[in-house]
Structure formats: structure tokens, C-alpha cells
Length: 67
Image (cartoon, rainbow, N blue to C red; front, top):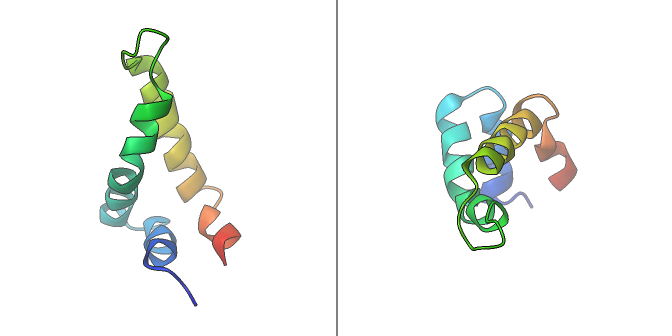
């Protein structure tokens, strides 16, 4: 059985709207892991995490790992 998130990831490979929805769903994780020791969000790290997420979704078709 395929989850809704799996189907969304699969669509996000070619669809920009789906990619934005994927990013929206994982933004809490990105914000949590981009904080520095003072608890402030490091914008450079946040940008890198978002870029890596897009790369994983688009180029590496990460949805295949969730089958």
C-alpha cells in the first residue's frame, strides 16, 4: 500500500506544485535541524537543507526508497 506522502514524492519529481507541498510537509524538520547552539535558525544551513531536499526529490527520485 502506498502512502499519500509516497505518491506526493513521486509526483514531485516532475511537478513544481507537488515539490512545494513536499517542502511544506518537512519544513518543521528543516527548521529544527538548521538551528545553531543559541537556538537561532542559521539561514545558510537552512538554504543548504532545502537545496539538498530538492536534489534528493528531483535527481535521485527518493520516492523509490519508500516502496
